[in-house]
Amino acid sequence: MNKEKQTPDFSFEQQANAQGFLRVAGVDEVGRGPLAGPVTAAAVVLDPAHIPKGLNDSKQLTARRRGMLLEQLLAHADVSVAHATVQEIDTHNILRASHIAMQRALQGLQTPPDMALIDGNMIPQGLNMPAQAVVKGDTRSVSIAAASIAAKIARDEIMQHLATQFPGYGWETNAGYPTPSHKAALAELGVTPHHRHSFKPVHNILYQE
Image (cartoon, helix red, strand yellow):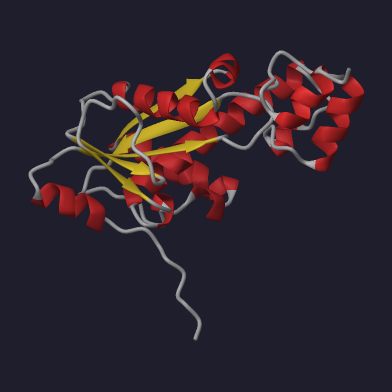
């Protein structure tokens, strides 16, 4: 039997509302896997009266659709995007850095939320508000799906901008992910200041001795 594809809904937010949490933020990050560039997180508090139709995990949407949805979100929702730098990724580790970005995104909201729905199975260390981790949250919660869209668009734009300064690595299309062409360029052109030294393919080139 074919399992119907899961689409996100507002039920996690409604459960939180029923517990007395009025402003519920969905939080997601993008960019844990790339060899280059920051890790980016977004936090979104939706207006229940204006939830854009078709919100979904950003990976399931075309770039054009993501852009249209973000426009609607910026018109009606509280949206905050934040980053952790390559230096922070190398200093801490990618998981901790992604949690730092998530906390920054929550702090950047115009009005502080009462509660956070965090994509994944972990709540960031030291988060100073009630939170619930939601595994595969970007396919289950519309707020987390909205955050995944905002984070992906912001990070893709950063990588497209960096691609103009460091041509040859294909960041405008691969967003820093370890594609065969990106790894080949790394071997040929060397490591840029935007590469993550703690990631194996980069580390191996730096310490070939």
